[in-house]
Amino acid sequence: MNRLKRLQTLNAHSNIYSDSLFNTYQVEKTMKSSEQTQSRKLYATGVPRSAIAKQLGVSRNAVNRWTGDMQVPKKPCPVCQESFRPNRTNQRYCSNKCSNQRDYQSRKPKPPPKRECAECDRIFQSRNDERQLYCSKQCRDKVRNHLNYQKRKAQKE
Image (cartoon, one colour):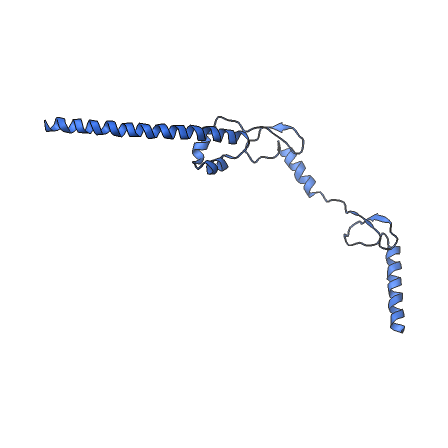
């Protein structure tokens, strides 16, 4: 008899316990489904999975499970303008060829800007020095000679 009572009380407690577990599971399930749809929407716009996990306050593994079957959206290559599906969310170029071409363009020396000569007001492009003020040696020498003449004149007086 004692054993039968114990079994009945355990059975009653287990029903209550299982009902409360079921209710919490249902709440968590609805929260997860809303987080799942939100994470899928964010991932479709190109947001990285780690950023989605931080934003929603869930683990990266959960976001990976929810977005695992999705493909990263296509985006245009800045060099050739061809649309491509990146392998990673931070991939910029469609191929190594475009990446190398962009690197080459950024390293390529830019021509110096065109300037106006301080002596004759002629527009020129300096060959190798950004500080070049005169278009030619003749203009430079004219200015130097004039400055030297003024210095000598000031010393005589």
